[in-house]
Image (cartoon, rainbow over all chains, first blue to last red; front, side, top):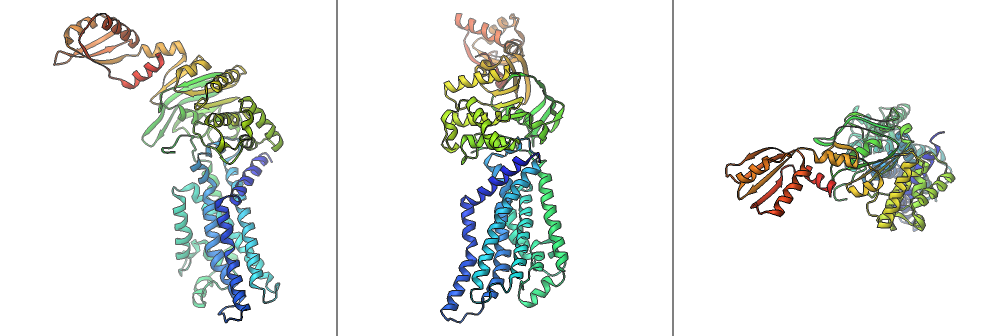
Length: 263
Length: 304
């Protein structure tokens, strides 16, 4: 492969930046939250206190509410937007764009570094959460559900990462628009009845999730109108479209090396 | 060979460069102009970081913007002092080498050679955030050299360097030009550019004002028509005397009989003769003001 060196070095650097930075440490801290919640529950159970939910329920709530609804949109927002925005704001984009490597490879390499780190962190965190929630019961009883959850979350990392990577290139103030889309549009429209919710990622992720994603009535409203195959197809098409658009835009943006005012 | 054909670049309503045409051939070409003249815009176009709004910028016949085939032959040293601050000098240069497709071990060797070439010395192992401005400047030059390009674009490369480093860098640039590379160096200091090459291109307000050898450019500037505003106690009398000068093309007298607007064809000769006259006699001169200030500024630093 002609650009092997560029791919390796770009993805490795992006992965290193995500793990050895303040942002990376904050994300690691956020990933321990489900563990703390599970440990708290186990401590309450161990103390003999009456708790309204068991480990299985807590696990399902954390997967749907924390990982899908918070962790994945938030981490992919900050990391996806930063694929290009960090270099653009830091003034180092001319170094990347002045090199003989196609720009779409620059994006895909940095994207793959980001996705690899977030996937690994998510997988470790989810596995830990699963184990801590199952201390009381059979550990491997719901292994199939764990694997399904893992697959859905990893798919979520890729699709949300593609969306926010694209926003990072296409829009000014990408964090603002990212928050608006990731936590406004997604959470609002994703729960509405009708066709519009198909334009969100969250709705399709919920369809694929092997847990109830909402109280029963609302759950029926949310997920009953779509098959798992359709949800998977939607997510794959969305992910591919966002990544393809980002690659296309990379080849068109200008990155002049000029002094910025005040900087 | 870089060919710029009738290229313009606008930033919204602001003109970066306007219908510039030039050819960059092997050797050193100095790009001169005051701040805002369009030097960096032109270099960014040549480096493939900007796309011309109209016209073409090509390297060996192919477009440069976002074209890896052309970028393989280009090394660009940008003017802004921006880096991956956490890297060492050597690490940064090697990283840029790997982005150019050079395998890891070879990239490190080449990075060391490039850093040696710009005399970075022991500083190669420092983190960039700990480096002085001059060292950082050398790192930027080394990253432009690491993949051995045939075209080098250096935007204000001597900024922040101490006198010894400047002398060394000037010698390096001359050598790269003598080796057959196309080297384009921008600066707003004429004597710096003159030390590197006699072939200069003068940009002003986004246009090529003059190009060629330094004496030709000076002559071109000096021979441009220029309007000068003069006020003297005896404007009418001074005007009559000035009209006999061959460098004065036309003259108009203001209603107050003291103000003159003089159009001169050779500013250098006019100022020289006016200076002699003022030294010899008191003509009651109150104001002497070139009406084309910008051109005057260019002229002044060129002939300084």
